[in-house]
Length: 237
Image (cartoon, rainbow, N blue to C red):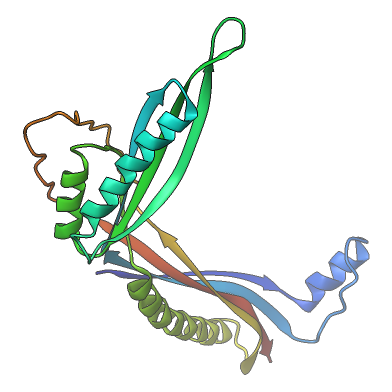
């Protein structure tokens, strides 16, 4: 776990504001104090504790009713299998159908796809569930990230760290500009996350396979959570 502090600063003085006004592009009046606008940023790299996956069933039929029956039956069976794994949150995903036409622009068949989405912090259970589902469904994507609970707790900590870093930088700049003190004009806290790119799988298992699909060992990787504090202070001379 690594925490990083980054600082950026720019100076706006009363004379600079006056020069801008004289050029006709602004009408700000000097405040009598030097103003500094800067930003501090804190980052922390954490291990991903949540896995998300999406699997789908694709089918073709001569009419839309037969297609819907095939897709719904497959997804319903998948949901029954998923109930064996209560630690995995399962939901039906997107579903789409579209017709096929002959040269006379007449509908001659239908193609459709239905998805099922998984989310969990239980990697072992999710891996086994995916293996079970891949006997009839196709993996569309697999990705890892930080759960909301872990992310919220970390962001609260980083907000405090970013605020302290902002105050420390304000003190440093006050000293660097030989000022007597400073006051905060404004400050904003912003959160951000840098997640790894999703891992996509093209694995497809035949529904008539006699062998079960082995579960996969997950390597979740890390994500970076960051909070920035940016604002303006006025230096008192």
